[in-house]
Image (cartoon, rainbow, N blue to C red; front, side):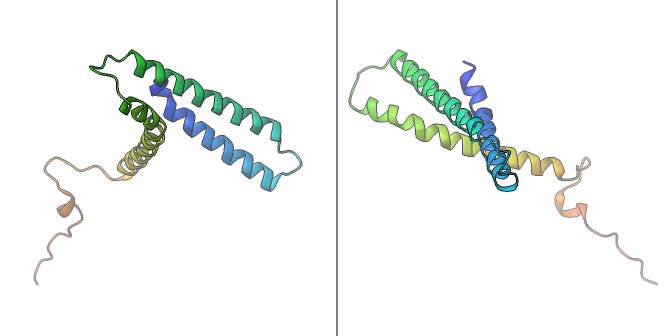
Amino acid sequence: MLLPLVSPFIDLMFLFGTLNYLVDRHFHPDTASSASFQKLVLFFALFLIIDFVASTVAFALERAQGRSSRDKWLLSQVWLQRFAIAAIFSGALQDAKARLRRPLLRLGQTGANRFAHPRRRKI
């Protein structure tokens, strides 16, 4: 139950850990530890295996009317769905970040008239 909630964050942590290793290896090749990166890859691979096993168990426990060969095809789509949801999640985070940077509108104010200049008086 908790696995789908933390899965996108684990993906992001793996991405940041990989980027951190690559930056360290580029700028500080003497101190960059490949052993820590290997552990990171190992733990991420174990997480993916646990995630797939949990998906398989959930799929097996789901009560379907009739079992068919299509069920195996649907199970193979779990990997595609997992990474597609991660991409959608990162897009949603970017959108939320952009929305937080925009100025707030007052009541009755729309985006079109927010930046309008007041009319100048004719002299």
